[in-house]
Structure formats: C-alpha cells, structure tokens
Image (cartoon, one colour):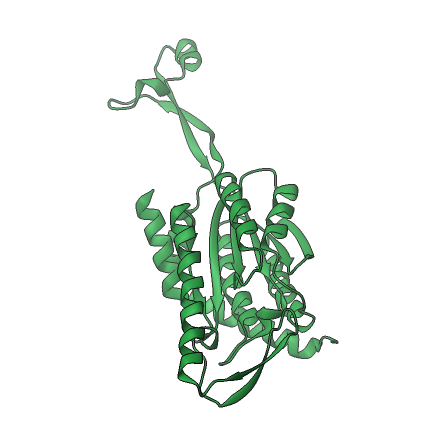
Length: 297
C-alpha cells in the first residue's frame, strides 16, 4: 500500500505535540534516576576535608603539593537506548480511537524524547517475522521524529507474523555494549518458548523493559452475532458465533491465560513491563515504573 505522506506527517505532528505535553521535569528526573550509565569516570581533584573517604585520596597530587587531595568521580551518564518495535500484521488492529501501531509510536516517542532530553542516544529496530528496518543509535530530536515516522509508515505495509526471537538475535548482533532496550509488541508470537529463552539471555546483558500493547477487543469478544474474524498475521478466516456466551467465555479465558503466562514470565525473570492499551492513558503507568525502579536503586 502506498504511503499517504500528508496523512503520515499529520500523524507525526500530532504525536509530537501530544508527547511534548506529557514530558515534564518530573518525568525526566525519574528517567535519569531510573536508567544509569555505563559506570563512573574521573572528574577532578579537590582538597581533602574531614569526613571524606580516605580511599579516594590522590596520593600523587598529595605528594607533590604536601596537602591531601581526593579524586572526584562523576557518573558516565550517556546511555544507548534501543527501541525494538513490533510492526507485524496484528499491530494494525484497533477497535477504538487508534491502532496498536499508533499507540506503539506514541509510547516510543514519549520515551525517546525523554531519553534525548537526558543526552542519550536512541536507535530503532522494526521487526515482524523479519527485520524490517534498523536505525543505529544517535542523538538529537530529529532522531525521535524519524523513529515515529518509521513506526507509522511501517503500519501501512505491515504483514506477517511476530518473530520476537529473531529481533532479539539481531539486537545481540548489532549492540555489543550494554543498552537500555524497550521491547514494544503485542507479544502475539507463535514462538513464545523460543523468544522467552532468548529474552532471558538478553535481559542479563541489557536493561530490558517490555511494553505489551493490547486492544480491548483482544480480551473480550463483543456480541455481534455471526462474525468472520481474520488473523491479521496469517490471513486465516474463521466464522465465529459471538452471540454464544460459551464462545465469548472461552475466548476471554484463553486471552486471560496468555496474559497471565506472559506476566508471570516477566516477574520470574526480573524483567520490568508496562502494559499499555489503545483504550486508556499510559503516562501514569510509565511514571509508576520509573518511580518504582528509582526507589529500588
């Protein structure tokens, strides 16, 4: 499908305005406290004062001057932040005001703008059942807007399944140093066991935050009588009698079990997650994550 450039830019502009309004000093401060740099680096020396840790004394400077000096260090602040964003066929779905892909773009933009305000570098990996696009990490607000454009543009051509494991393998190949990784997906993968094994490995190497994106119609079928449902990833059509209460109950039970399994997996492996949905605000959930992580540190 050809991309309507005018419509695309209108969506990008809307998301830019929305996310700029949501970002404030408190959110940026919580982000800074939550995600730490690679380590510490030397800053300066200053005269020793009572109460300073004697282990920080710079003996070379002290010997030259005859006066005790200590070394001061500062956090090596700059981070690399990578967004792994699912652009498979199922991400185009939305039963309310926006699609899951649009929500993924919004949340990614909010986090990316916050990272840029803290002088961090951001990069992007778009994936479905293959790697759709890779943008190496770089600084600047233009990087954020490009990220949003690429996520939204991919929605028009979104097809295929969700291979999270493939995206994680690609990440390991291109990002050697530790990074903050936001994995934005509906996690509707036919290869759950495969990606779970790999996600455990990646989470030990990088600081991973998973952002499951959902739509209310994926957890509860509306009663609309006979309906032909299409799997957006496989194209398979199924005729379903949504007027049958047992069908709706079974659908809801399966969806609930899958969500609970996913959340238990995250909890068991110490992976933070922020579930977001197309029918509700997400900013408070992100703030809550930042505050929780900051307090744990």
